[in-house]
Image 1 (cartoon, helix red, strand yellow):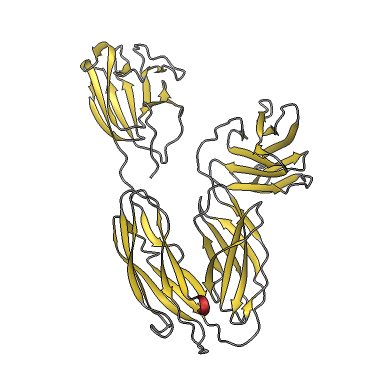
Image 2: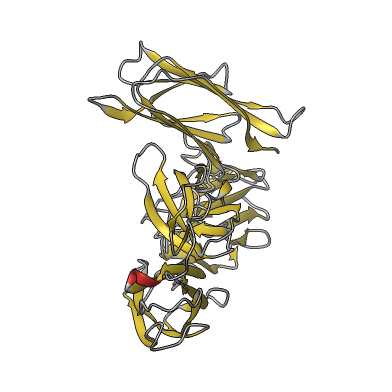
Length: 461
């Protein structure tokens, strides 16, 4: 669960219903409570409201000269809020003001003309802590496969979408088409998570390496009896395929047409064309810019898709796949690269982040030479808000020009163009802050950077 920092209430809305967010966004859009100010008397109605952390209260003047001032001085509002471009003095206007509360507690407030701390025209906001999110337990992958000679197959179980409180679940490995005893050892056990623990847990299924030519066989895996967290009904069952290593014949051909598509901030979906004669597929990945692939999973024969989970957000990964059977492994497929989604949040410009094209696209540049590394330093171009510059160490030495163009009037896409005058390693990350979709561009060390003209970078609108 994301924790809120202990800040005073955040001023959000000034007079005349102008909604201007002046602080970092909360994880989800929160509810709002309305309070009427004045009118027939000197009171706030209702005088006490109860909200959750991250939610807002809107005060609307119903008549009379009033304002809203926090007892602790953290906000003062009427025609806008002090410190947020408005004026919190007493006002008879039909004003509206909204404050967001990002920490739990009890916050008193009053009208400076008709009340005081705890007296007269006074009100209270009770902010309750966000509810616990214990998360959901599920198999990390609904299908996997292992060679008959593996000895022990490792099966992973994930806790996602929350980690509040301890949790536990019972696992069972039972016969599918495989025979308990002669093909594998049936078993059951319990996996546990501590409070704030969302690491994957695992158990092992012993595989018997026999000499019978019997084809691939399956073990049925089940999760049940979850406590302290929910059980994902779509991932409480999984299949483990034992790939027979006693079948004759040559190695299969390499898989083809591998594609990679980001589906969330932590997952990328893979798909490829099936081959013949395989008993399963092995999937490997590496981070863009690194050299070593790591095996991350396997699937059974005729399965041509895989979800790579547990990835870092806004990060590019390269994948490859190969088929296997009892005779060995095929050559590798083509390589496919995709970047996980970024958090959907407004772009915040900084010395290392450019906000381009009406602040929709966030751009970051990381660089590495043979002896140094760092983040590119931004040079915004106020007269050309679709474009920006980066330098590495000296502001007099511009290294890159980048622009994101809105081509939606004549194509279905936003375009990303950039040119760099360097041969250092570059990782350029561009994120659409409205959708989270991310593109990552890479230039290897000691290679002159080629210009990029990506006319299908992001979808409109």
